[in-house]
Amino acid sequence: MMKALGKINPMLAILVALALLLALLVTFWPGSEKKYVTADFPRTVSLYEGSDVKILGVAVGKVESVVPSGTKVKVKLSYDAQYKVPANAKAAVISPSIVGDRFVQLTPAYTKGDELPDNARLGVDRTATPLELDEIFGSLNDLNIALGPDGANKADAGGVGPLTRLLDSTARNFGGQGVQFNKTLKNLGAFTKTLADNKDEFFGTLAQVEEFTRTLSKNDGTVRKFNDSLAGGADLLAGEREELAAVLKNLSVAMVQVRSFVKENRSTLTTNISGLNQISKTLVKRRAALDETLKVAPAALNNLFLAGNVRSGTLDTRDNAGQLFTQLEQSPAAVLCSFIKQAPGGNQGCDVIKGALGDNPLGRAQPFAGDTSKPRVTEPIDRSLGGLLEVTR
Image (cartoon, rainbow, N blue to C red):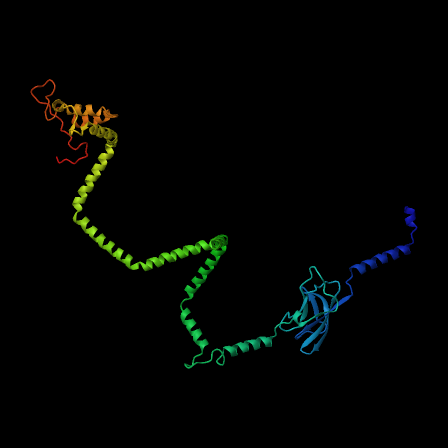
């Protein structure tokens, strides 16, 4: 194999190397093929034949010709065909400085999609030129004339123009208010920052308001009925306003009279309320006995009804009054307990009676045990019936 390679003609090897080098030069050498574009500009100040054509600031071609054509200028451009230009491209004359040559920029840069065809035509609507100094000065002069004494600031009957009055009034209003104005701007900035920081809550609130309004719209009939009812109530009050005014007036008079009555009878009302409070407390304290009494009372009243003799108009009972009085004189608590114990829960009532009356004979004093020289002092009888009645001592 090595022998076969060694027999290759040196001239043939040189030709192969030259062919490869030529292929590389053809592949990587900038192409000489060009594409052309004709653009119509309203004017072409400082734009000449040979000026650069650029894409993103990189020169890709030249201006071939600049030819006036009526009210516009026809400019023929050329650029290297290896560069792609989008089909919607526009041409703009760029002025890098106030004095100096200008160039044409093709914009925007190509990314994807259709390409601008060769010999394409760009109308005035797809071209742009920089604003010239004379146009800027002319616009400023027009503005000065419009705001001058022959324009918006034309003097009135007082010899002062409205623009002058506006400036004077503004100066007077803002005179000495610089700090306050600065503070207002800062507060406004803080307010906008707060809104920005709470945008989620703010839009959440708006969403809730939207939901509320949507609910109202869904229940429009109910809302209308409510409004109608409210309007009817208002009309009723309006129709009865005289009667309502009279009622309020009488109520005012009555309140005055009640106030006078309470003021005049303050002591009596205080006593009555105090007594009522005492009765209420006693009833609460004796509620068990009261409950027992209410249970036994119907049976006792029924027995009393059955004991009555309608024909003779008498009560058919055994008269033990003498014995009863004797027992009452000796031990009133024992007599009362004998009646109460017959009813359910009578032992509790008996304990209450013994606590109130004791075992002493009615109206007598018993001597102490083992001592006949000194009588035993009896405890006072509870005449308040367990605190139910107020007794003057």
